[in-house]
Image (cartoon, rainbow, N blue to C red):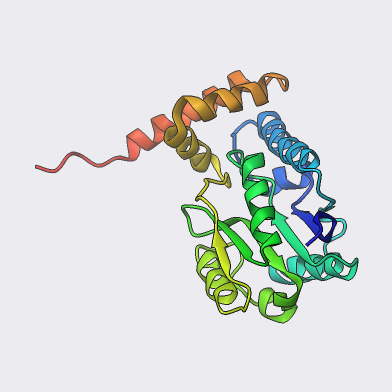
Length: 225
């Protein structure tokens, strides 16, 4: 398969719209800056992959729910002549270029690819055109903890074998950001620090994370007797 046969579909909302639905910081300016940083990092990663790509933000999305919108986006990309599509969101800061390279390698072998998150979601899905079914995909439980298992079952039944990528943490809320920092410690902390310093929101982010940690501590019950 020629690399030009594969397209990356970045399925997301614009940072301004995303900030209305996703709260990563109690400070609105910091929240928007953080979401913009995650979005820009993902776009930069996609551009450096060397693969063709399209961005489907809310202006281009069509459908009454998430399933219909993502199925329509995939349908439109396949109608452009691509034989496989890699679908990404914009909220996985641990995603690396090597993950995209691995995905492309498996796609060139005729496989479908799935990358899951600890909460049962997905941060990457690569699907061959012959395995695409808009009706089935539109009726899956998107944006729930069940979507990984549903996609896994669906893609495992296809003639094209399914390849799993490493599990990565995405960020959908303040607690998710704290969990990511706790899991990957200094490595991700340095990455986020570098990412945010240019937006002048690093200090405010640290304050909000400390607030989350403090509130979590207050909610803990007493130790067992």
